[in-house]
Length: 294
Image (tube, rainbow, N blue to C red; front, side, top):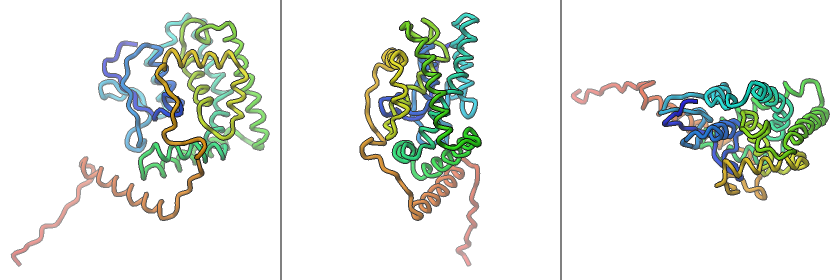
């Protein structure tokens, strides 16, 4: 990857002792750190205005939207430092991890009712500016329900969870075994794209102050994997401190917006969008002249 002089990453805010609460944002940041790239960090609070996360060089967007991670991976070219065999293993293990662990992580955040209502929803409601927070969280929730119905298929919720925990546990055990010789990275002594993915998901899963800690306890059964997460954090994020900006674990409550609040939000959002469009010349208002001489 050629050095980019004005690289900037716009991502979701840091919280809970995490560099960012969003897996895609953390994967991108970790990839850049593993490549020793200097990057300016900014925190987004209105995804309707500009994509979160997004990567730019001197103001030119390099990666955003659905292809964000793929573009960042291609830009960093981290796996090119590995030999051909390890490059193949990195790609295969990454796919294995995403298919085995990510669906359970997703469920734990966006579908599991207490976790969603007490941590995920309140966090985004505070992190995204009013009134766009209401529209953002509604859209994310709808997308999450559609995805859950797709991955659950015809299984019951209990059956889905049982199978998901079995699959995730098997996956975590495999990585724990790889790390049992206390190597620096999953594939040896050089970092890979695989490390950025595994570290980001597991670190966030361990750090979110969710009321249901079953997934966290499952991860904690694998001591070599947990030590690996601590080592990566110490190496690339030594300045991190645990703090709670938007959600306090002991006081997190389920928020419900009243009809009046939603109406005010809708009016405010419409007004802001019209004002933005007018300022930027997207729409223009013609005010008729009044003849005062009559």
